[in-house]
Amino acid sequence: MDFWPEFLANSWGREFVAGGFGGIAGIISGYPLDTLRVRQQQSVSGSALKIFRNIIANDGPAGLYRGMAAPLASVTFQNAAVFQIYAVLSRAFNSSSQSNGDPPSYKAVAFGGVGTGALQSFILTPVELVKIRLQLQSASHAATSHQQLISSSSSSHRGPLSVAKSICKTEGLRGIYRGLTITMLRDAPAHGIYFWTYECMREQFHPGCRKTGQESVGTMLVAGGLAGVASWVFCYPLDVLKTRIQGQTQRKYNGIVDCLSKSVREEGYRVLWRGLGTAVARAFVVNGAIFSAYEITLRCLFSSGSNQTQQ
Image (tube, rainbow, N blue to C red):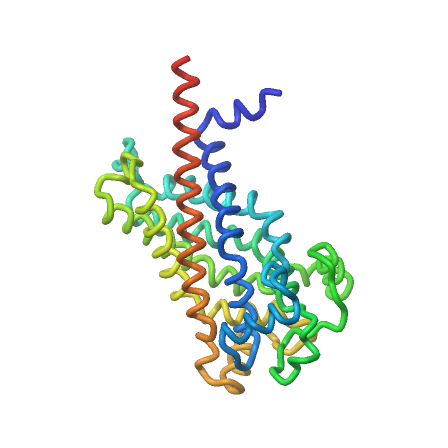
């Protein structure tokens, strides 16, 4: 009965809930662009517009949201955990001389982000595996076989649970964590850049806001968007390899190095940046929405908590 009031009475609970709202906002705002990005990374050729038209023609508008149930079902916990872990680690990496109410140093922010990215990979890997398998599943696979899509499943899955059961049955429990290593290699440094860029940009746009927390929504949107763009540009080649490793239903790649060498040999180095434009556009929209939802929710929760304390 008293769980939620007690949970929200401390900063940990508020940061956790705010992170959940941020994650939901990010998924809903950017999922169609994420579907286009994944399809581009797996195809030998094809522009985002061409892939978009094919999806609409074969699957209808719902095709852009295929597989969204997997991340949406887990995103509240996942994103909440990310922001909570980051808050704890950034404070832990902060030196004692700077922990007198001031915000964490930029160095602590970067190290906290790296640690957060590494830890959240254990949550994210199974979710993204299922999401990618569903996004690559389409009624148009037979018609697009000339594009040599890596993941051309012969059976059609109705939802994330169906995919997860199929993976466990054919690949075992280890199959659920296919891509864990490359996910960690991608997310650890990318999250360091992500949080560092956000803190730097918000302070640049609104000096003093890191301490007061009074930046405008416009600052949140732009700073969050730029943070997402910076982190994605840095880690994008690894993301392409991750998509190909997790998207294969029949063994083609024997690890990260093998995937890299085969992809470059068959399609050239440009393959490592295929779909970057779509990813950058998505990153700006999604991460602007994530940080805005997070900061606004946190502000409301702290304001509500202060009012209850005064009463």
